[in-house]
Image (cartoon, rainbow, N blue to C red; front, top):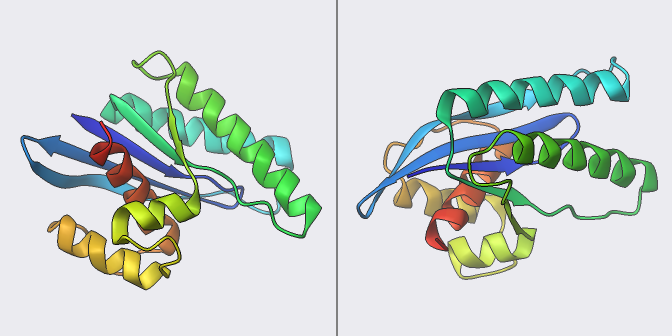
Length: 158
């Protein structure tokens, strides 16, 4: 079973593909899609969508998890993130084999599922991920590890 985790953003979009076979979970691929802040919003959304379509066409995930957005004090940043997340969900829904079903997780629920503590820090989450997924690459951006955590949450709740 192939599962895709997405950490949405406008500048950095983390993604990770995990595969569960029997009780073993393996890392397949992942990274961070980076959109240029010099591009217009529409150009950035188009770029993000095109990159996600490539990932979907390569790995054909049966399950997808995505992080819910955290609204912060800066309204413009929150609106930009909401637009990016909406575009991401559209592309994922349009291009998946599971009738567009995507499981959503709040940041605190992801931390709670992975570590048992809804207020764990990023390093605590990464330590558990390294233990849970032996072939997970090290030294990546936190957006990547967030996507891995989201994919793992999706696998654990199938």
